[in-house]
Length: 416
Image (cartoon, rainbow, N blue to C red; front, side, top):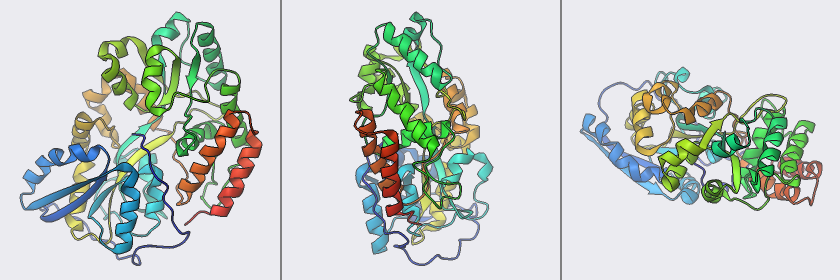
């Protein structure tokens, strides 16, 4: 889920951990034992201790200690622990700041043969791979999808838009039928705005960074055109520059003040909680995000499990990581917490496969695009999100904003 996170400041090229150690050998199937320390941020930490009861039963000599850390403090606490050499054994990393943390050199390589990389969605697995080496395993995954008021669309005689042009046609028709702001955009003007713009950039054939991630390409013509299109949704009156903010999406969508938004799969449950399952069944529909000239690309989000090099019990940590990424465990965690699996086979379980609102999500995960996997993305993405407000309010052109952000990014470097 979307979380409020602080910026992770890393000195470019500086490792906080000891030099790279020899990769651990294969992990066997004997029971895990000893003390196992886990750090996890946010609400997952509330559910995880009880969820691990079956694993503890199967490993009776294992003592699992779960420490729940507020999401907005997690990265700082982990960086402090890395610098002090007092790390836990296993952590759950957030995709938005994962690259910066992995750049510390503090994480262990995934042992050979622990998992089959092909079992995961390739784009989620690749977020943990640096120079051909995996330093973590995907635990959950999501992609943004186009979610809209089906009842309002039916009254206007509309289907889900498939292209940028159709998106504006959809918005204009919704406006004519009384919807104040047909399209909802992220307007927090923070790093999540930049992640959202990343969708439009790839849909238009662009990228914030070159293919081998050695140079920023933020002000490319494709990217400028993508930001211009984003801004035009506001300037033409289809989206508000002021709302809804992320947590206000449910009341705005429920009231019909907005009709559609690119959002993650959690929105369905939020609407169920607010309005009931019958309301959702009657009023909500999902589809892949509208395509630009290069296709439909969603923003990828994921969480990874990683083991620290200085872990005191790496054997048990990797055994738990293997367990958490098995298909059956992924299904059970979805039923417990609602996080969607990163393992492809888990999506065939009836609990997921029978929900038509997740069909678009499964399709989107095949091609969803990640943010630039470089340590300085936190700084660059935050600055980009802030500067996007100038475009939203007509105070600067897309070209001027991206030229400025390009200069900022070149000054920040890549941090590798």
